[in-house]
Length: 609
Image (spheres, helix red, strand yellow):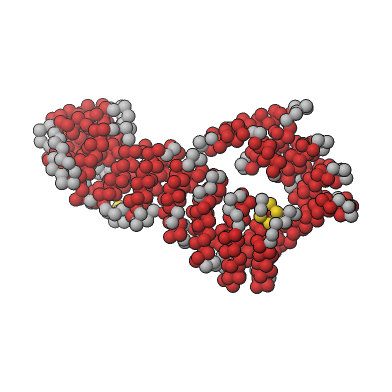
């Protein structure tokens, strides 16, 4: 693997291009271009950069993208007489091939020839590949060569044969069988766990061993396998968990976390601690290790740390809360996947005690986050505000802030939900209508905000015209000012048809709340009687009918909406509403789905014609 990493360094432009991709779509585009170039190079008969191209393909494979078209190139490179090509070819075979694929049979003869090679390093490559992917048939065919190497005088090859064969037997045969038995509970773990604990302790406290040492860690591959087996044995087993608690604490405190190998062992230790019935102090230690991972410069380590914390935030909430500051700082990470995980974890950490501070961070993130995260961020803020809002005014201010910042990215149900909240908070009607009126004057591009503002102006326009509001600075607003704003919304090219519907209904409702500009309202409504939009035209025609034929009913039809009681999803004012259900109307009145009435702010009352 070290050899391949050295080759990867030669292709830093490709790696940099992949990591700089802001979205998964951009990353796929970079990968597709690189794979196309690699295919073209593979087709050339005389290709001097074969090992480099295969190394690039292996990196693509490590990212999870298809790389099967490189299998035959691995076979060709293994058959090459050059050591530099053989080592990459064998590594590719270990990563891209397995014993179930027909292509693995093609390298059997090459492995047999390399086991007889005079170069001990070529023999070592063949042995490692055989231990990694050798099938029963392949091992049987190559048994004479293995036996001959065991009798050789070369100590390096003898060690490789023993370790490779031992790894093959132990990892591929013994441990899977033990794990299967552990899962099926077909053997007693009382005698097995202490033995595994003793083996693991020997690996942890053993001194430097050049035969098994990797970056200062004694046989980390074996440690990881033992930890995984201990995790299965200790799951839902209090006795087995108690027997391994001290060992896990020892591994967690004595393993070097400055190197990738140590982090791999620590990560398996953390997973084991969190999966068994471990002590509370040990779980806190595991969470603290994940907290240290969040400070690592490697984005992959930060990502797996947040993924693990996300799984335990429900059970170890207080322990994860201690690392809230570090998690929030990860929202500023340049990597999109890390940023998404940080957002999920930050939303999960919101509680009644930290709602104000966390919401401040989330609103700041919302103003600068990538477009693909705005909808998720806005929804998370809405849910948190609904659950932990310290006051109704704070709740309304938070939602309005989101609509002002990312109104185009909120979900469809945001408008009716906010209208319901405003309706049920009668003491803040004056404050809300003043705040929304100011927002409407400054920006009409955020359509959900404009819809709520028009609805509030239509319902509580009389409170706006009074100019008396204790919660906010009073503003002198005239009837003409309010109608000018609504006309601007009606005439704006940025307004959606539904937004114009809100504005037209608000204008009509103001006819019962003002006295001096009723003729102007009648004129505005009559203009849209010939509108190209059918919905808007129908509303205008019905409102004109209210002025002409049913003026005596206008005040009753356009009165203020009552409090909206919504006990659960789909239940409004005690009645169950389905999407396919329509509102009952009188003869001569068009039918409209109940959910559309709700989405229109529940104020699109049809006049009886």
